[in-house]
Image 1 (cartoon, rainbow, N blue to C red):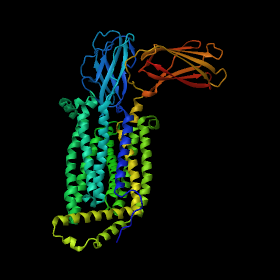
Image 2: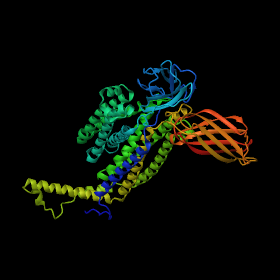
Image 3: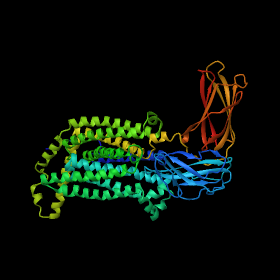
Image 4: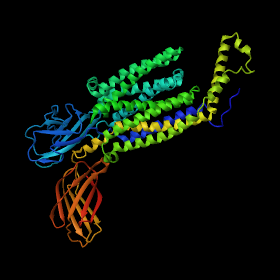
Length: 640
């Protein structure tokens, strides 16, 4: 019986290689774009206030400076530094005092007595409760503002080359976890014959190697990632010891220990279990592997849940087990999808029953993902405004859209699964039972030369494998399923990357809660007066005029702001209401409201207007000329 030749096109051997190359290129492209645009990890705890406040001018020197945060943080000896105008330490250089009460997280440092007048810079750096480094700076003045020589580092905590490598390791760890857990579950639950398939063994082992290597890199880089930002400090034993005393460090060490147990699980699954022939013994061993593997997988997932987003914020006791379920469901679905793709492209033996079992597993995983995802979204976002107005919320919308696309592609896969039969497999089994062709006489098998016999046996094995591959690739249902699963895998790669991005982005709820707090600021920079002129028209009677704005000295820190309004006749014009707001869109700062006081007809003024950092600021001006006639105009100005 001869196999039907496939249609003209790429050879069956080259097609899996092309598919693998496509997936590899897609993974590289997606992670490259995300890393290029991500920058350092966003702060997950935020500075919500300080005493003195940012930009404040106090009459006498305070005894201490206190900072309030939205979540719990870990601080060290130099976590809060107060620098005088010349750049010298104005604090007592002691470890910050924990002044927290109830749900209020507050730390303070004592100041030297007799501090002279001038502008002081407060620079702080700490580690958020969900393991991410945070930092910032702001200024206050004693007596009156002054020039300062303080130059703060431009690199944020967790940034630079160390931050990039750490983020790559973070992405790789999630990918390795998905392949390790999802691939093992696919073999045990969906296709137990896959335990003897070399491509499946390689997939799971590579997942284990990736997760192990990424965890080691994160453990070594943890100290420079949260501190100096220098690769050389990765081998600082004192720094490594301090990392081991933290919650993230303990989680990484626990993950390594669990990966040791996972290595034993892999050895039994693809060794002892694969060689068992007695069905009863094999069934009992499969049950033991499922229980043991489930415990190890749950433990590895818990190392993320206990050290990142789920471990802090509201309802942490509920959020951590929910996060574990979410991670396991992601691994079962996406890791199983990768396993199915490998099985369809690289092995000829997988049957329709295994594909249908995975379809059921994928459906259950999606249900768990939906339930846990809804809870996590509510917990991390909290409001519609945070969903649409924060980076976390926007990434979450993108993730939901990708899941919708993935489910749509999966629907086509299920249609192909419904049509799938084992006819190709049956045909290949029948072909194996055919007698040898006339070109291979029976005397060949009795060749007295052992080397010759072994060579002929290898040739027959290669011929049989080629026949199997041709028969498999000639099955239109199986080919259609392969293409559909490949499309699923491509979308899944992007989905996994976006999901990983969410773990390094400030939750929307936290960002909104901190919006009214003290923003980070750089030290004052030199600048010049800013003069703006903006025409307006409210649309009502006597609604046309011109707004003139002067900002002096036009630099970071404290500024005086004057506003004049001229009517269409060029004379001073009074209006019932005038409001201003300043926004630095490049840094997501603002809008910072400014309500000037009326000094004279057509003239308003505001003093001590704080500009926290240099940049291209957008100045919005709202002018109301009657009860119903109002307009908002804006113009950008370079300040600092």
